Image 1 (cartoon, rainbow, N blue to C red):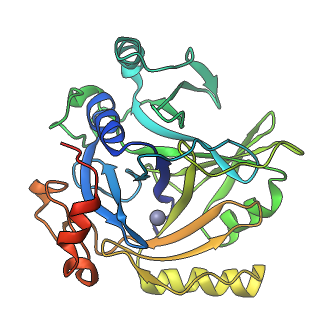
Image 2 (image 1 turned 135 degrees about the horizontal axis):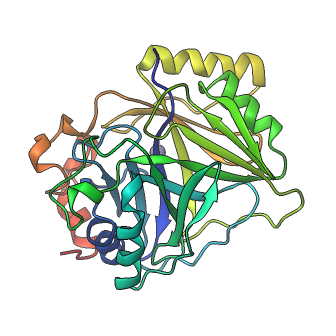
Length: 310
Ligand code: ZN
């Protein structure tokens, strides 16, 4: 069966060092790639994920030292949700308290136990307790014991004026189907994809528009197994929805097209190939600053402007 679902989520952060410390130390994710924003090479691009940086485990950031805070609103990702084993919620409650991370009490959503919290930039995150995933691979080289470690993304929720047009893109183009409703939330699932398989659409009517900035999600990327599958999706977007994405851009670790979905959220379709081990060995992922070939000649001047992070 075709693997659909979320490939990665990319957000805007404040200071790079604080971002790195929170995601690798407090949350125990692996830094799987340290590179720069290819469109703005004076800025880092950090990729966090599981041990191998598999699609569906990746959260990435553009950290700007002096980024102004964004504001959550219509046409934005409301929350980014990770999966943890069912028995680990207690561990995580304790950990968030111990680390002084602002959080809410666990609540039930769609029958699942969810623990919502915020990162140092105010980005809304949550952990969802998923039964039966204790045996899934987990990064054991971090500060969180492997038994409690995050097992990739569960999904995202999007805050929208109306859900139907966005739902049509998810179902017709991106391989999702609507599986449940709860209050103003409609839940979409990508087949039997475990990692990053969920998108919740929250219809909020005339709420304020979002404003980009630190603590907000820049875009959500969805998976295409190959260039051919990506092209099929692009043809459907054009023919059925009148949406023409960008040309394909080579992001070194995947190849991407971008488009704004009808609800205003920036979507990307990223290939599963070639992955993060393309320019450094799997056991040393995230160890060195990696640059794409077209920026390698400018390495010295790029390194000179990037903030110290370690
Ligand atoms: Zn992306």
